[in-house]
Length: 67
Image (cartoon, rainbow, N blue to C red; front, side):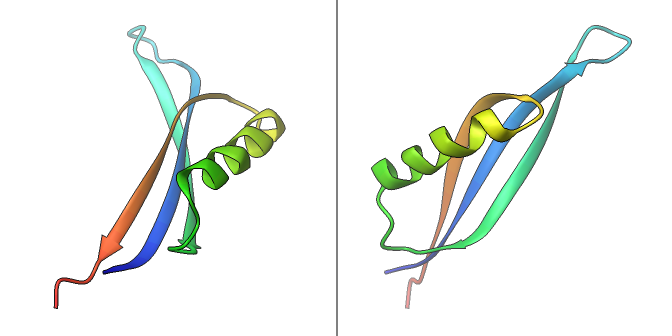
């Protein structure tokens, strides 16, 4: 049974001295488990342009109860 969800947005924040990408993430906890992926995609689409950095990816982490 799904009991909790978290939304994680990962952004690019330039490159380091070795030329490797630097990324930053922002997490939104306590996402309603009943929220659909389509609804979360709409939230990401609304939040991404408001951020200082460029969005690389958005992930949803679900927590399930096994007992």
